[in-house]
Length: 129
Image (cartoon, rainbow, N blue to C red; front, side):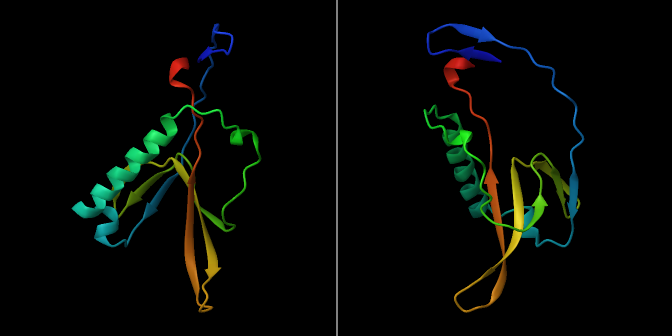
Protein backbone atom coordinates (compact mmCIF):
# COMPACT_ATOMS: atom_id res chain seq x y z
CA UNK A 1 0.00 0.00 0.00
CA UNK A 2 1.39 3.42 -0.96
CA UNK A 3 0.33 6.42 1.07
CA UNK A 4 0.71 10.10 0.29
CA UNK A 5 0.76 11.85 3.65
CA UNK A 6 -0.50 15.40 4.27
CA UNK A 7 3.10 16.67 4.58
CA UNK A 8 3.83 15.40 1.04
CA UNK A 9 5.93 12.40 2.04
CA UNK A 10 5.25 8.89 0.79
CA UNK A 11 5.09 5.65 2.76
CA UNK A 12 4.88 2.14 1.38
CA UNK A 13 3.63 -0.81 3.43
CA UNK A 14 3.43 -4.45 2.33
CA UNK A 15 0.94 -6.91 3.79
CA UNK A 16 0.46 -10.63 3.34
CA UNK A 17 -3.03 -11.42 2.14
CA UNK A 18 -4.62 -14.55 3.60
CA UNK A 19 -6.52 -17.00 1.45
CA UNK A 20 -10.21 -17.18 2.24
CA UNK A 21 -12.94 -19.66 1.43
CA UNK A 22 -16.01 -17.85 0.12
CA UNK A 23 -19.60 -19.03 0.27
CA UNK A 24 -21.40 -20.24 -2.82
CA UNK A 25 -25.16 -19.73 -2.79
CA UNK A 26 -27.27 -21.70 -5.29
CA UNK A 27 -30.68 -20.28 -6.12
CA UNK A 28 -33.01 -22.20 -8.44
CA UNK A 29 -36.46 -21.37 -9.82
CA UNK A 30 -35.87 -17.67 -10.52
CA UNK A 31 -37.73 -16.04 -13.40
CA UNK A 32 -35.38 -15.98 -16.45
CA UNK A 33 -35.47 -12.14 -16.55
CA UNK A 34 -33.90 -12.06 -13.06
CA UNK A 35 -31.01 -14.28 -14.22
CA UNK A 36 -30.47 -12.65 -17.64
CA UNK A 37 -32.08 -9.19 -17.55
CA UNK A 38 -33.65 -7.83 -20.75
CA UNK A 39 -31.78 -5.07 -22.68
CA UNK A 40 -33.64 -2.18 -20.97
CA UNK A 41 -32.78 -3.49 -17.52
CA UNK A 42 -29.16 -4.14 -18.55
CA UNK A 43 -28.84 -0.50 -19.64
CA UNK A 44 -30.15 0.67 -16.25
CA UNK A 45 -27.78 -1.71 -14.43
CA UNK A 46 -24.77 -0.43 -16.42
CA UNK A 47 -25.74 3.17 -15.62
CA UNK A 48 -26.05 2.38 -11.89
CA UNK A 49 -22.69 0.54 -11.91
CA UNK A 50 -21.09 3.60 -13.51
CA UNK A 51 -22.56 5.85 -10.80
CA UNK A 52 -21.29 3.50 -8.07
CA UNK A 53 -17.80 3.43 -9.62
CA UNK A 54 -17.74 7.25 -9.80
CA UNK A 55 -18.79 7.53 -6.14
CA UNK A 56 -16.11 5.06 -5.03
CA UNK A 57 -13.39 6.85 -6.98
CA UNK A 58 -14.18 10.22 -5.43
CA UNK A 59 -11.61 11.60 -3.02
CA UNK A 60 -13.30 13.05 0.05
CA UNK A 61 -12.48 14.44 3.47
CA UNK A 62 -15.63 12.80 4.90
CA UNK A 63 -14.86 10.66 7.95
CA UNK A 64 -18.06 8.65 8.29
CA UNK A 65 -16.01 5.46 8.09
CA UNK A 66 -14.87 6.21 11.64
CA UNK A 67 -18.43 5.79 12.95
CA UNK A 68 -20.09 2.55 13.98
CA UNK A 69 -22.02 0.76 11.25
CA UNK A 70 -25.82 0.98 11.55
CA UNK A 71 -27.72 -1.81 9.83
CA UNK A 72 -30.39 -0.34 7.54
CA UNK A 73 -32.73 -3.22 8.43
CA UNK A 74 -32.77 -6.09 10.89
CA UNK A 75 -33.38 -9.54 9.52
CA UNK A 76 -31.83 -12.78 8.36
CA UNK A 77 -28.55 -12.29 6.48
CA UNK A 78 -29.37 -13.57 3.00
CA UNK A 79 -26.16 -12.70 1.18
CA UNK A 80 -22.58 -12.27 2.37
CA UNK A 81 -19.93 -9.94 0.92
CA UNK A 82 -17.62 -11.87 -1.41
CA UNK A 83 -19.94 -14.83 -1.86
CA UNK A 84 -20.86 -16.14 -5.30
CA UNK A 85 -24.39 -16.84 -6.41
CA UNK A 86 -25.31 -19.46 -8.96
CA UNK A 87 -28.68 -18.48 -10.41
CA UNK A 88 -30.67 -21.25 -12.12
CA UNK A 89 -27.37 -23.09 -12.63
CA UNK A 90 -25.55 -20.05 -14.12
CA UNK A 91 -22.53 -18.80 -12.10
CA UNK A 92 -22.42 -15.06 -11.44
CA UNK A 93 -19.64 -12.79 -10.20
CA UNK A 94 -18.88 -12.46 -6.51
CA UNK A 95 -20.99 -9.91 -4.73
CA UNK A 96 -19.67 -6.64 -3.33
CA UNK A 97 -22.66 -6.27 -1.03
CA UNK A 98 -24.23 -7.90 1.98
CA UNK A 99 -28.00 -8.31 2.06
CA UNK A 100 -30.52 -8.93 4.78
CA UNK A 101 -34.11 -10.04 4.42
CA UNK A 102 -36.66 -8.48 6.73
CA UNK A 103 -40.37 -8.08 7.15
CA UNK A 104 -41.88 -4.62 6.88
CA UNK A 105 -45.43 -3.37 7.24
CA UNK A 106 -47.10 -1.19 4.60
CA UNK A 107 -49.75 1.43 5.41
CA UNK A 108 -52.32 -1.13 4.31
CA UNK A 109 -50.95 -3.37 7.09
CA UNK A 110 -50.03 -6.06 4.56
CA UNK A 111 -46.75 -7.72 5.38
CA UNK A 112 -44.24 -8.03 2.60
CA UNK A 113 -40.64 -9.08 2.28
CA UNK A 114 -38.21 -6.21 1.88
CA UNK A 115 -34.63 -6.58 0.79
CA UNK A 116 -31.96 -4.22 1.95
CA UNK A 117 -28.49 -4.07 0.44
CA UNK A 118 -25.57 -1.86 1.08
CA UNK A 119 -22.04 -1.65 -0.18
CA UNK A 120 -19.00 -1.15 1.93
CA UNK A 121 -15.65 -0.38 0.45
CA UNK A 122 -12.51 1.35 1.59
CA UNK A 123 -11.49 4.04 -0.86
CA UNK A 124 -7.90 5.23 -1.28
CA UNK A 125 -7.13 8.60 -2.85
CA UNK A 126 -6.08 8.29 -6.53
CA UNK A 127 -2.94 10.28 -5.62
CA UNK A 128 -1.95 7.54 -3.17
CA UNK A 129 -2.31 4.69 -5.66
